[in-house]
Image 1 (cartoon, rainbow, N blue to C red):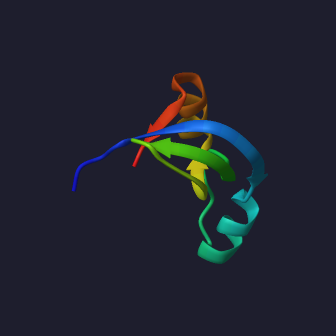
Image 2 (image 1 turned 45 degrees about the vertical axis):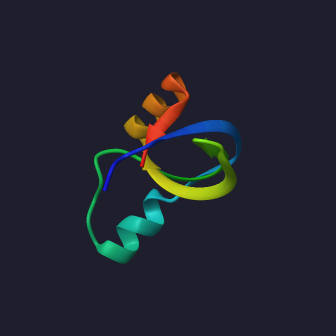
Image 3 (image 1 turned 90 degrees about the vertical axis):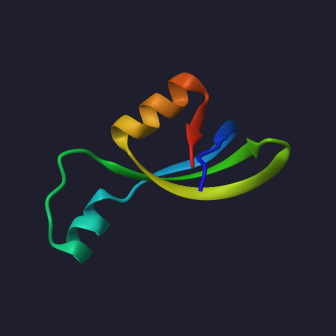
Amino acid sequence: MNLLEHYILKIYSKKDVTKQYEKSVGKKLDEKLYEIEMKVDCYGSVGITKRIMGENELAAAERKGYYMA
């Protein structure tokens, strides 16, 4: 399976889900987790999706304008 660029067109919401994750899994995390609802374009296929990303992954995706999935 190949990874493809998913270009972020618009971010609708960014919700911190770190506490929920830590409570359900029982493990303390080093960085925050976010649930992001966004509009993405992957080679012409445009859609709205939700994705959970770590703080560093989200910062890199916002800086580059895309993430690999």
